[in-house]
Length: 262
Image 1 (cartoon, helix red, strand yellow):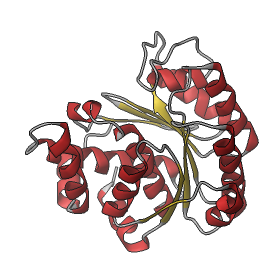
Image 2 (cartoon, helix red, strand yellow):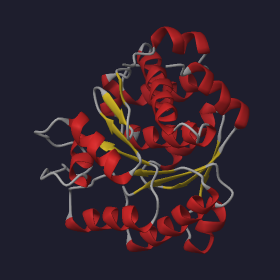
Image 3 (cartoon, one colour):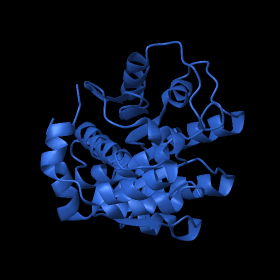
Image 4 (cartoon, one colour):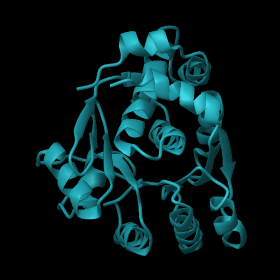
């Protein structure tokens, strides 16, 4: 898959990516989008959520710091994006941890068209109806075949499903890809999962006509940058700082030589 050319498209189009996202990681998500060459905006108020979404190339929703008011804003933003036909990405952060969180995920999925559902294995399995437990916002164990679970959910919801982990899964209605880039330091930094959703939104905003390809390219570019950052990192702190630098300096040649997609 040609991921390098899509990075060029991101830098050329500079998509506006509207977030209603996790307060814990909101700065990091914005900076990642900016480092890719796109434009982030973080507008949570219900009074402007729809207006901002109507301007955006993509909308990223993340339920990490969940309230009923945030869900109301998310519904407004998603519906406005649907009207514009801008992709909507939902990070089901913490799905399976509490009944309230599960109900709010269902309300979002039923209340608007979600184009990409993203989560770790236990989060996606829970959204798909499996009986699993999520450890707060960290992945719990899943007994089933995640590729099959993701594919079935993608077919049911007519969307793209992204399962992040040691090996990422990108499942569409008729396609399935595995992304094997990344570094274990990503699991030691708060917010790398949220930033992955922002990478998905950035590339989906640049390539809305082929969301499976956009999702794979976003993960590949983000995770290759993580591999490069890890080469000179002393630990989680320096890794995160270097991550933004490596995203900003990615080259097509590096992506072509280091991407691992099947």
